[in-house]
Length: 70
Image (cartoon, rainbow, N blue to C red; front, side):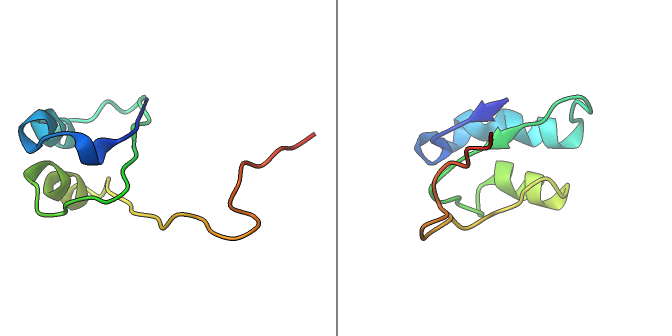
């Protein structure tokens, strides 16, 4: 599952992620995309503590676009 625009979601709407971090579904790949994450929010703290929060910088330069493979 991919969720985009997480920076626009209010903190109370992110609370289900706190419970999910404690008991994740092992067959699910959850990708949360945001321009910037507020690491002080309880949901993100729980995800980080559980080892599920990974932050990556946006790709830049000529190779930043989508990759098309034949």
